[in-house]
Picture: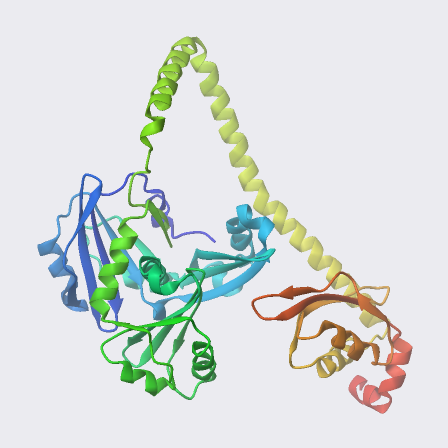
Length: 450
């Protein structure tokens, strides 16, 4: 997923800023704080609330314009939130994997920017949270910034929630925590597990299934925090679990911002934003000084081959650039080859008169409501592979075995338990005797074929 062209260099901002303005558009107003660095510490102003149309003028009068970073906290309604499960072993390459997968999704391919957030490990699986924002929404948020504040970054408000939870670890207890934020006629909901945000959604009506499901989940929560002035608004969304902590929006924003400013860097839609210099322990000062001395001596000895090293660096740079340009083409070629193979297989099956559509309808009808499939292949040898998740994979194998024409139904790999959903991952293989399958359908197949 490519960033907006005018944001690429800003996403690589190297040095920590001296001044930061953090703004949070919530509803019709903006809560904002100005912070100024004093040596290694940040001095944080009292939070202010401004009308959107007056915000730029107030910032211009209040904040020093030199060496400023402007950080917009994107409200929940402005971005999408999703999560995905990956093997824990791919953690080091997770960003590249998600970036490649998103390039195949049409709504995200050209019109959105992603931000990879929390990572929670569950056994041998890794739960990744991903926020994505449409470019027009991102530009709309950036228009509220005064023109003189050039270095602008945007981060989802899950960053505030997560840092607030870390700052209140005494009540979080590293367990199952929820934060509810009342804004206008909506309720923004955030779910944290092990101190990381794993779920975020918006409730707009007490009649929605989301409201009912959320209320049931809240009864299983360890702690609930409510951000707003009046907890009575929860009853409008059928939320009957009373929060353990109630805090107004200003105090929530101030507490979260102070914790954010203590971080070395944060993840934004435009890239990573460094807020502080890395901590260097005093015990390593002498080794570092020795290394610098040796490095200077080495540079002095190597001065005669500087031209060769420069040329070598240029060659390696061109090589890396070519490799980077070729990699997407190679991936696209593999994708095209896979599509061509699938097309040939489908044409072969249809050419043999195999009732592919009827097969899918029967499979859909026989699959229980507590079972879902995310992968299905049928090859020219009538071999079928299914992959998905079910409350009981063994029971599902039994159901498939009873369908006429389905032969040698068995597991292709061991069944694994998903500790988060309490369901079982499965890979099931079998072959189809199409003659027997057609015969079992009888007149129904003939009617469908016509």
